[in-house]
Image (cartoon, rainbow, N blue to C red; front, side, top):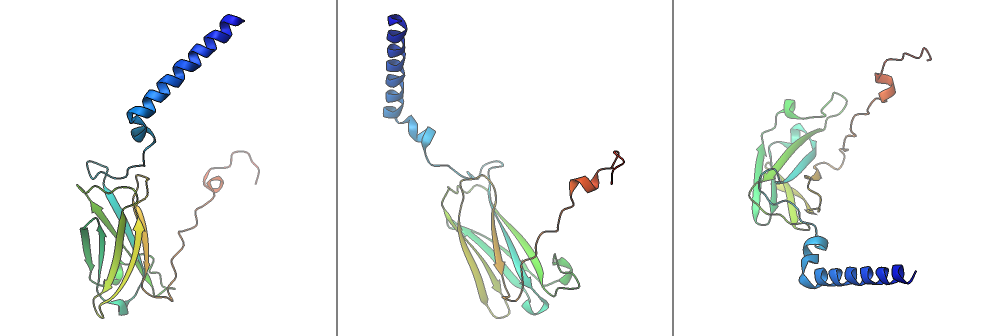
Length: 171
């Protein structure tokens, strides 16, 4: 019994020394440090998906921009009703989508990005700011051009049970 108690004391002492060396040497920053986001290299590219809601014929041409760490991406949209998604006959409002990718740009977790849409007819702009999340995924921004327009809900998905054949004979 005395030997097992002494052995546990030695093991716990060694473990304490190992942990003290790790914490003292600075490796904890790498282990417990802040989460890093996109490096801009390879497939690790910072992206912002901008959904523009409330686009109508009256909106006219628009330009969308996304800026992060002094780098910008711009896309202009010439109004074309056929390019609008979600523009069904019951709704006069449509949606446009713009994906801004920033290859070779390092964007850390918490860095601020800004997405703006500019109506070229009257130069009115709509902007949203966000912070890069620690997750390695695209950021999403919704910009509403018309207060009367509503964001469209995603289509309701069917219950998987309804898609599979019923072999049990029960209804």
